[in-house]
Length: 559
Image (cartoon, rainbow, N blue to C red):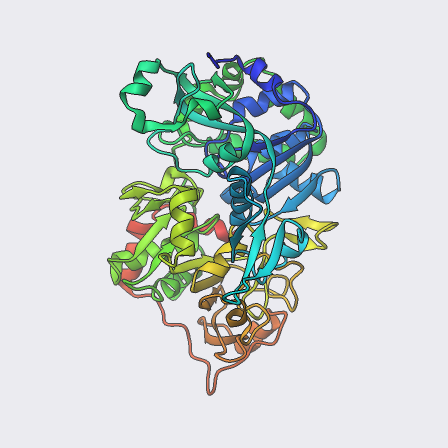
């Protein structure tokens, strides 16, 4: 049976009040054309499941289509917060149910496999589990005595994903392979709508069946929409349009003018092709690959503070390091690359947690986009490969930062204020609650060291460091823990017994008193004098400036 529909008919399959799940990840491969049509049809009271998303959710929220969002993270990554999502949650117009990435995946897998729950250690020791005591239950294995989280099924009415090609029967192909977590929502959903770059003959599908991603019996509708993920990416055909993201965010700063912008630039054009043309057409898609240089930071003794932070972090890694990165992670990405180009040639780094052994000639404005995948030996699948590598201990190193960090290296990236009535809705913890439980060597960094970030008590624990301190991680059965915290003022490690932060070294010109005044809790001191952080070497600086990050993308973290 032919399953090809026009976009109007496909969107009509989504009734008001549905629970829909959106594919893609962050600024990559979201089904934007179908989302735009849902807005044009004025859908209402939707519950949106989005593991990691940005623009698609922000559009739906801006249009008043959404009642509730179930997510791990919503942001524009290196280009800031999702403005309409943030303001709608802060004002109480839209409810948000925050899970971590893997807790959501586990719930979707429970639904897909018709099981009462999927077990995991993700989320242990965080505040995320307490938000959902019925769907992420703490249980103890009666045989081993180990604590785990039982994740119950998450029901999805309709999955909406974007892909490269499909035949008329609904056999779908993602080229060169499935990278994102879209399979999780497709497998869990009652129905699936797929937008594709092109419709291909069935003979092409059966000539290369190994390239089929979704078989026809799990797909209910196929819509041909060239450039259908724009303004997000459709790797490897096109990347995201940073100019659109920038213009959209700028317009959202003035709410009274934003509705006119949104109506004219997003909703108004009658077709997706007209929407493309309204926003610059193919010229815009071609231009977004250009990367603008940023200016160097403030120089101290022949190097800048960003360079000192990168070099200090890079020196912690060696040939046994198997690392990956998350969102807005320019400092650790530079550190991984610098270590590999200097003293640790066998270091494994998965760019964006996907592109293993990537060697990009320069960094783009996002650390989750395909702009940093060049030279990779493998593009791993987010669902199958990455989470197996992380949970199985094959990855051993992860670096994260937070809007708040406490003395035990726990982080908050969820809310400022109370969860239910936040003063500021942050992007969300993403994979923090998962990876803090899975990865043994955790490194923290912050380009701003002040009492608002280094706090006595987190407003929300999105990711676990040493938990409550002492033996808490061991009691939860978690490996390793935070090793180091590098800031723009100093380097801190953790006391071997209490696990509280301890000053390890001061950056040049910084005093112990300045660090303590900039910290919302008492920082432990080592025995004797506090040393000065070792300065970068000339060759390290040359490689960082000329080979690793010649366009100074790391300075995005110093805004």
